[in-house]
Length: 192
Image (cartoon, rainbow, N blue to C red):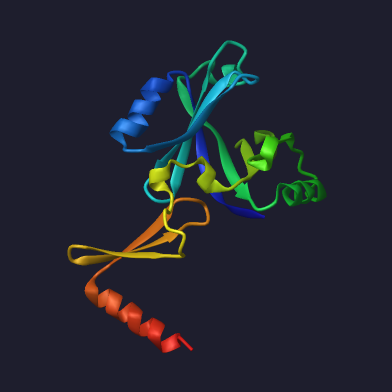
């Protein structure tokens, strides 16, 4: 049912301080973000390296759903988002197993479908199950830009193979000339 961990969401009181830490010090690349007026919070996705992401969430007004979580702390891990291929199948799986969930929502246009499993039912962790296309939430500079299934490039003494990752973004492998020759030989040996 679970395709992968998409991101870890970190709730913070001071968004700018957290953004500077993750973006300017650790080198995270900012992606999609938005205000959610109904729940009184702001969210922003950040990519770290090729395949890892975090989300910063912060209250935008009193009465935010984050108020209780941040009452006695500056920040912390709020939830883990797991990507599923089909949110309806995920719901049915949970229902058959007798695992309660809440917050089922499908956003307009079908770009994001979600539900949550309470920490009481998930070993102390708030889990968000979500159906979406990962690249829709990433900055253009961390997406695979080629319409083909791979890209090959040379950088000095090494060869880089790049592939689109099903979770969004790019997976790269760097090979020496010898490793590239071995790969080519292995591919030639199995091509029909």
